[in-house]
Length: 150
Image 1 (cartoon, helix red, strand yellow):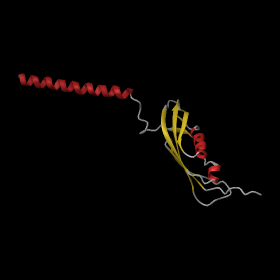
Image 2: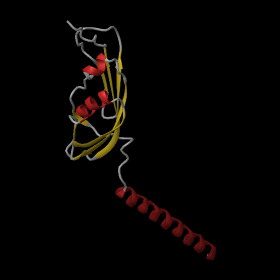
Image 3: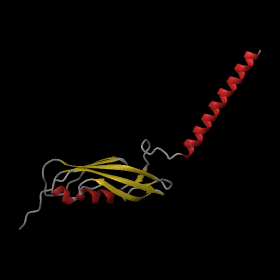
Image 4: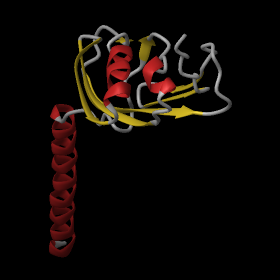
């Protein structure tokens, strides 16, 4: 009988530890910041990105990375961490057009990839744009022939 009682007490102690650990984990996760890397915020509206004209003429390609902060559903801060200056300005202008749900508060890095492909043309042609918002944007354009001097 004593052995049975000791096993019961040990079982109660183990169950108490398990329950208190579970309760602590729930409390901690409720106060922890959400994991934004696995679930990026949903973009509900955005302008179509363009390839900056001077960059196309100069055949400038590359990647632009921007740290983006969203508060109350609007982009409130952008900071380019890499990229050619002729590409950065257009990238930030496009990101500032993005709208999220009104309760969205988030911070994340987005990457714009600019490529020039095909034959030079005198006229601006449509771009190929691949969107994986808000994490990645790929913009591919045909190069523009520099204007000739008369």
